[in-house]
Length: 265
Image (cartoon, rainbow, N blue to C red):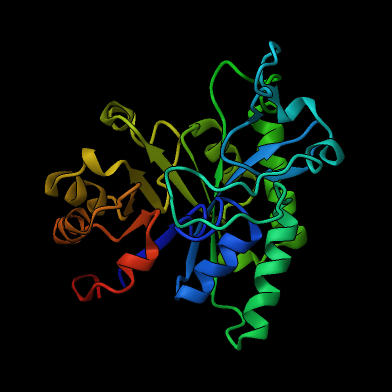
């Protein structure tokens, strides 16, 4: 498998994250994998959003509003096209948080128009936290069923992956659709102490934060037959170091940089 460069929430150097424009720009740059985040709405639609809430308005005392407490027609009224100060080159656009089905449809149509149909892989991060069931998302079983149903109904099934920090969601998705490519996100190494007990099977991917990675970890995971894609790697020196350690790919906010580096070919 060629070394993989995933566009983290799309091409964030150009457009606000998790928007149709950011995903299409990533495709235009030459990315063949986009990473995006999923949250459930009150009416059980899958919304592409990193945060499970909409921030409280400036000067307003009420707490931020969870998307899971809002139907999608209400969510879709909230603009999310303002540039982020973390990415000075971002353009101001008219955009709302899209549905997953809209991302599939729009990106696939864009690739068809540019003569590259069937090239994009979609790495879906299901946002889920223990203790927030019923507040920020449905039960893990219902949540996983929602995602699998959407993949089967509107996704290019053979080019979709699912990943999460929540091993319960990963395990349930695998149970419902054993053929789906699944990944376990890692932000601390202790998660691997019970590897295979949680999530209960060997996932195709284990994706740790790059600061946790050394050659021993990569070799250990490869010995299980697991691929390793690290997040979120933005500095060229770190990108090169990760490849030298033997990882299979990286998730980055700057695919426009990574794709131009001959050291990553």
